[in-house]
Image (cartoon, rainbow over all chains, first blue to last red; front, side, top):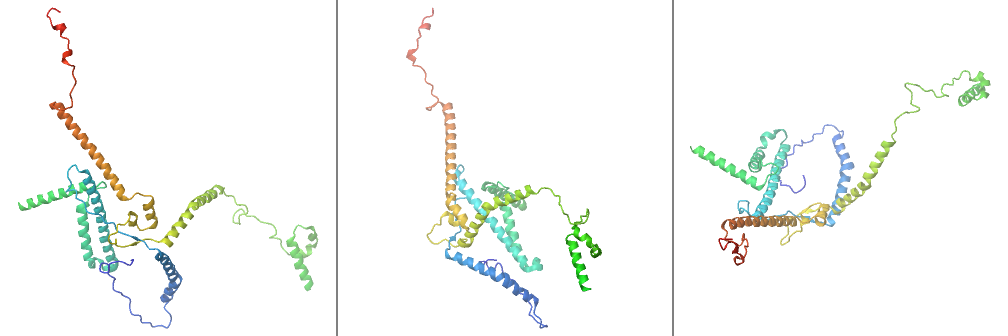
Length: 175
Length: 186
């Protein structure tokens, strides 16, 4: 993985290399092959990469994450205010994209956990599994079956129907 | 004795090299024991190496492939060279926090230098697109509101008749000539 990752979220697995107990005087062919690979492939590639990085160092430039201001929601817009509707729609679309990326990150964490644990992932990856289940259920309930032409208004109507159904269930449970 | 064997070998070589020259047919004594099997080309109809290969013309195929490679590489090689140069010597941007009191330009939100260049020189800033869309929406909503109010006003003025619309000009009443009906005997 590249450098700036969170060590708590992606912990390194404990090393399982056994202690070497050499019983012959012959050299280990694995060591020979590793050294061969190192000198023929690793060293040239690393020196080339270092030279390329040195070229990059000479003129550095940066890119930033764009931060958008929060605008009034669809619920706070008056009925015929189309401008307010447009801004709320754009904000909903940005939030939708952010939520998609969140689900992807959680999924990647689960995949990393499975890769780390190997064959015992079903019992060791509980935390990540629960987190993924929770996040994907929340995503499904909010953005779930909106379809390709989903908009802020359709999402709001979906929420309204969900709340009506919950209220109906609550009154039915009371009776 | 040795000389005889050398002569025989020499005569054999000469016979192999020039089998049809008449000068050696006289030396048949010497050359009788040497066979002349590989002096003429023997062609087999089945298993030998093909001497004259029949195959369909590959001129058009080779011409097509040549032209394909030529036209692809004509722009492909400069484009690949330029992109390699940019990736090696200019490099991609690094992610950083926005400094205090600094508003980045709209192209500074992209990583690759070519994307940044396109965003800077070819595309409009996304804020401009946003504002253009908002301007269109504003114009259309104002038009719709105007039309709605005009419809309401028209309906009310026709109904009530007390507004400035739907006044039909009539003639001046003093111009009416009542003389045809003024006396009962006309």
